[in-house]
Amino acid sequence: MSHIHLPDGVLPVWLWVPGFIAAMLVAAVLFRFTKKEALSRRFPLLGMMAAAMVLGASVEVVPIAYHVNLTVISGILLGPSLIFLATFVVNVILALFGHGGITVIGLNTLILSIEGVFGYFLFHLFWQVSKRLILTTFIATFLALVFSTFAMIGVVSLGTSHYEELIHHEGEGIFEFHLLKDKGPHHEEETKKTEIHLGRFIAIVLPLGFIGWILEGVITALITRYIHRLRPDLLHLEKESQ
Amino acid sequence: MIQLSYLDYIAVEGKRFLHRFSPTLKIIGMVLVLLGIVTLRSLPGLLLLYGTLVALFFITRIPIKIFSLTFYPLIFAVLFIFISGFQIHFLLLIFLKVLCGSTGVVLLLATTPYPMIFSVLGRILPDSFVTALFLTYRSVFILLNILEETQHALYLRGGFQWRHPWRSLINISNAFGHLMIKGIDASEKMYESMLLRGFKNKIFYRGK
Image (cartoon, rainbow over all chains, first blue to last red; front, side):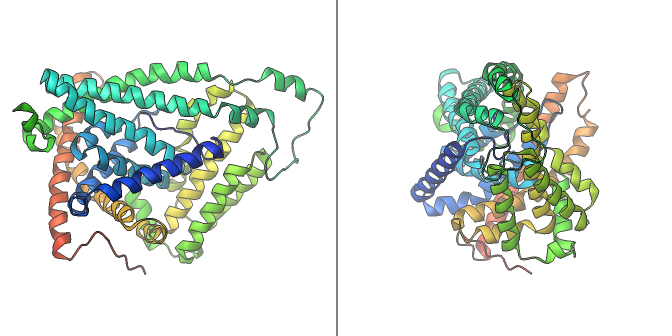
């Protein structure tokens, strides 16, 4: 739900390059501090959960571009450090599969991993309080998605000045082509009229997002119930129940 | 997603000139396309880039059914256009950037098998990350097989019906749950067989 579904070249370089660097740094730190043996043992599980997330993200509800992320359930099963690596892998594969946004892989990883990491901690926190599996999973997923969607809106709003530049300075760039464009005296008037409608973007994203948060919350809760029935050991809830 | 296996098949079995190019060269080409997307801000420039990519697509004779994949990211771009207040120039700019990116990537994938791309990436990225990419790629195909079986079971249990949304949601969630449990079981078996073959945190790929 909370991917930045933006094409390459829309976000400013000063935004996506640090995003890449930050994601790489977090991944490097996680690789460095995760025990090699544990990492090696959990590699196939990481691959499998990442594949499940790729499959979930590929089932799109047209025309509203909804898809389940399965990040929270993957976070619950993988833990907070491995879910970051899994989201990194998922974003690389999705970008390579034609979802676009190769340059925003870093930012997407940071945003999507918020879902997984927050989902994991919220799930365990609420479980200790309520012990009701479906309710716990639903609330944890809902809140995790709210956080990541606001993080996405925050990132998109950071690039406002760049969007203005794209709209106002038509034809300017490293390579200029003036085959079709003819700047007349009306150009300045038009420029004054154009503005960035971030509020409109938010007004569309939030209601659509709300439906998505509920849907993903319900689906994740039902998946958790199914897993709890067949393989309760995977959820690691026994220790907390005792 | 089912197209992934078809894309992989075309990349492996294709015999056109782009298939014979070295994967490194093609990845460098893709980086140049990305550079063009990031730097170009004029419609004719982007049109030229898109035209070149489309021409390459058809010269390589990649099946037309794959071409539809390049339009997929437009669904997401539609949401973004609200920011601009429907400025035509901005919309065309965004759409062309989307199409250039997706056509470039699909062209790369339809002419280069995934493992070859990963092995090139392995020269610059950490081994553990490339191993994770390989395992995810392998797992996608395992899960696709399981999904196919699950779809039959789901169909017999009523599948997805708009008239019964709650039951449909339960069916879909159970299918995903089933997919995950089967996938986790398969991952445990995969790990055991990887250990038997001497897996030590790195997968070696021997290309063509």
